[in-house]
Amino acid sequence: MTVRIGTRASKLALTQTQQTADQLAAVGGFPVELVHITTEGDVKTGSLSQMGGTGVFVAALRDALLQDTCDVAVHSLKDLPTGAAPGLTIAATPKRADVRDVLCARDGLKLADLPQGAKVGTGSPRRAAQLRAARPDLDVQDIRGNVDTRLGRVPGLPGNAAGAPGDLDAVVLAAAGLERIGRLDAVSEFFETDVMLPAPGQGSLAIECRTADAPRKAGSTEGSQGVLAQALAALNDEDTRLAVTAERAVLARLEAGCAAPVGAFAYRKGSMLYLEAAVCAVDGTKTVREKKATDGLTEVGATLLGIEVAELLLAAGAAEIADLAAS
Ligand SMILES: NCc1[nH]cc(CCC(=O)O)c1CC(=O)O
Image 1 (cartoon, helix red, strand yellow):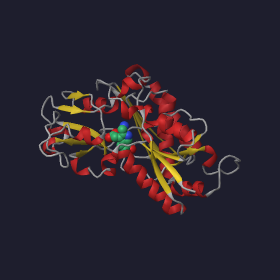
Image 2 (tube, helix red, strand yellow):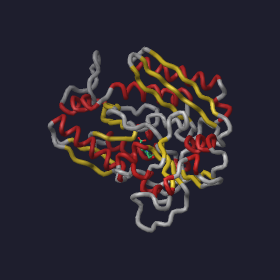
Image 3 (cartoon, protein in one colour):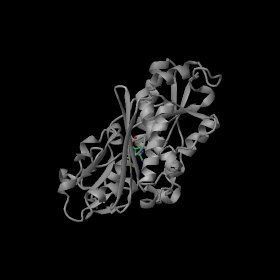
Image 4 (cartoon, helix red, strand yellow):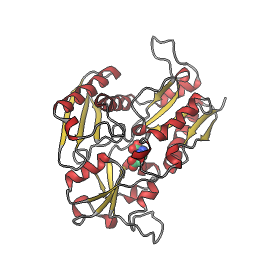
C-alpha cells in the first residue's frame, strides 16, 4: 500500500507536505507519494478576501480526500475554516513551530525604526490592525502572493533575486513559513505576542484524512487501527492539539470569518493551558484583549476555555469594534 499525500504546488505547501510525508513513511514503514492538487487560490490572482478567503486553498484538498484521489492532506492549520468537514478528521497536529509573526524590512530595520509613513505590506486584516495600533503613521498595503513573492516586494532582503526592485519598506509574515522554506534570514524583527498576537493555529500543521482511516478513539467504533492510523497518531503532539483547539474555539464562538481581525495564542505550561485572544479594529484605534487559563487539559477543556475567552471578548465589545463576519 502506497499512501498518497495531497499537496498544493506552492513552495511552502510542498516543503511542509514533503517533510510530513517523510515522517509518516519513517514512522509507518510504508511507501508514500505526493499528489499535486491545484486549488482555486493558486489559479486566481485577485484579492484573497474577494475569493472567499483562505478556505479556497483547502476545499480542493478536501475534495481530493473525499474522492479518494489522495489519502492524507497536509494543511497549515490557520488556513482551515473552523466548520466541520463531514467524512474527514484532523488526525494529527504535529509539534508546532514558532508561532510568531515577523517583520522583514529593508536594511534590517525594526518596526520602531521604520520612517514615518513607511509602506508595509500584508494581506491580513489582523496584522494590519496590530501594525496600525503600534504605528498609526504606517501606510499598510494589501498584498498577496506566495511567501517568496511577498519578500520580493522589499528591496535587498537576503535571498531575493539580485537587483529585484521592490516597492515596499517591509512585509509581515509568519516565522513558521519562513523557517520551513529556509528564509528566516530575511527577518529583521520577531514580534512578541504582546505586540502582535498570531492567527489561531499559526505555526501548526493539520494532517487530515478520511475519518475511516483516522486513529480510532477510545470507546469509538469509527476509525482505524491500521498502519496509517498508527503513524498519524505517532505524529500528533497533544500539547499542540490542546493549544490550537482553544484558539480555534475562540474563532468558532465569535463566528469569525477568516478575514476577521482576531488573534489568539494558547500554550500549555505545567498543569495549565493558557489562552490569550484579541479582536482589533482594522484602523488600529481599538483592541479588546482577554486572557484565561484552565486546568482541564482535554479537548473539551480547551474548547470551553476558547468559548469563555470569546464570550469575554464579546462582552468587552468585540462585535462593535470589528466586522467579525469578514471573510
Ligand atoms: N495564509 C498563508 C499562510 N498559511 C500558513 C503560512 C505560514 C505558516 C503558518 O503560519 O503556519 C502562511 C504564510 C504567512 O502567513 O506568512
